[in-house]
Structure formats: C-alpha cells, structure tokens
Image (cartoon, rainbow, N blue to C red; front, side, top):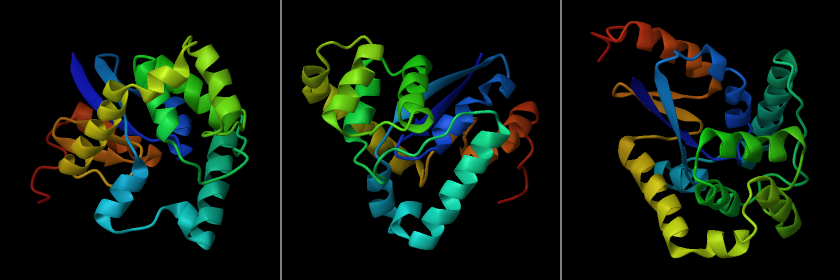
Length: 195
C-alpha cells in the first residue's frame, strides 16, 4: 500500500475540483488529507494569493468555474472571498480529518456557495459532519495545535500552495499536477537526472 499526504486549505476551490478526479488515483494509494493555513505559507514564502491580485483572481476563478463545468460539478462562489478558513480547517480536523469530511466541507463552500467563516454556515456544516458541539471542538487546544502543526510541517516540507500531494519523496502542487503524480507513481524513476 502506498501513501500520500494531501495538503489542503478550502479557501482555495482547487481541492474541491481535485476530489472529482480521485477515482483516477491508483487503487493502492492511501490519501491522508492534511488541513493547513495557506496564508501562513504565503507569508513564509513572501508571495500573495490569487485573490490578493485582482487580475490573477479573475483568471483563477474563471478557470475554476470552467474546470468544474468540464467535470460536471456544481460551482458557486462563497458570498465573500477570500475568507478566513481557520474554523473550516479546524472543523475538518475535529471531524476526524478524513476524505469524507473534506468532501462534505468542500462541497458546502464551493458547490453550494456557503460562507467558509460565518457561524450560521459553519453550524450547518457541523451538523452534516455530526459535530453538535462544534464551537467547543474547534476551540479545543488540541485541534488548534493540530492545524498549526500541519501548517508548520507543510512549510518545513517546502510546500508553497494548495492542494499539494506529498508522495514518494516528491511534491505535486495543484489540481493540474495529478496526472504527473500518477505518472510518477507508475514510474518512480520519472524524475531521475532532473536535479
């Protein structure tokens, strides 16, 4: 059985879009979602996110809409973007951090267009995740520490964007890098001699 860590922050629509192609991943690949805070990565590397550069933001969200349409996925922007994704990341961790929790949360924001950081929206999401005590859970120090530790680990690993797969000692950033990752998994010598 092979393993991949999948670093995500649902402030980005691209984890949602990538989930639609998980059926193309090898059957023997176990994927572990790792919620992180993209803003901390951006600060660390000294660059801005797409939503912070107006022209780049327009292009990015056009691409996201067109990609969703091409994959037959519903796509609705949340009411405000960027939003603070901290509570969303903590909710995923509190719900066990598995792919099912990520799918539910990603669809809540990017398929249905719900807010990623407003209490009413988070309460509705928490109900779907079966977390009736969600406010206490995301305020739990262990959950807070887990999100921080995930983010610190991502920075230490050299991750600079989301979503990023980390598998076989290689990083694959972006939804569009999944085919390259599957090629690498089929032939781990793919990048030999490139560095």
